[in-house]
Image (cartoon, rainbow, N blue to C red; front, top):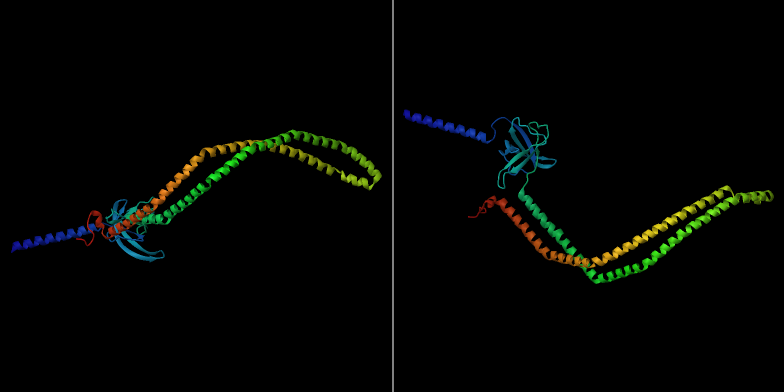
Length: 364
């Protein structure tokens, strides 16, 4: 009887010890191994985040999620995630909390990315939340955008460009020889008429340069004579005024000092105009030489590059014809790839175990 009591006591003590160890283990697993500070963040999507989700600070676990609650606000429905971290842990004010998955099929955890601000957040403050990145959704969006781009933009662009180049090539085939013949005749006419035109311009310039000094000398001599005769005329007019009265007064007004000054200004303007004409004739001769050289270069360039231009147009036409033939096949394969990616992402969401070689849900 005494032996049975001892056995019962040992068994009961062992059971109580195991229960205490279980309670301690559960307490440690929940992450609440000591005092903690509470923070919160807001997210538009909290898939995979629940009570007990670990919180990491640059890869080091500092706490866990305590609660997830929806909140309706001016920006629509958002989810508030409250989490507790080790008491006294300093989190910079510009830090960011972002949910991440450890792998394609791994669990979600919250990672706090360290900021650079010198000021730390107070316990109970909000940490800026950043939306999680989803690889499958990104690949699906890229495939959809690529399919839309090919169907709505690339294929019509290639078709339009091919039609335009076909029309241009046909126009060149039909009217190209005639245009080249007209251009060649125009160049030949310019080549034949240009020497005469340049010779005429050169002769005119030479005559202007030869006659300009003589004309200027004549004008200067006339001005000198006119200035020398003015006092005598004035004296005669004054004598005539004394005898003729009103007639002399009118003649004196006609040959006043103001009119003489105006004529002197006119002579000065004539001298300036003569100098400008000489400069213009010299510039015209230089322009004629440059025009002759330019026409010679144009004739040489057209003669040398005519076969290359025709060959380039023919090569471009063949390239565009090849692109037009294969555009439908490329678009078809891209569209099939997009559908396969959509089906792949749908099956992965329904049964992630397919990536590990398992069977679909419901198969035996």
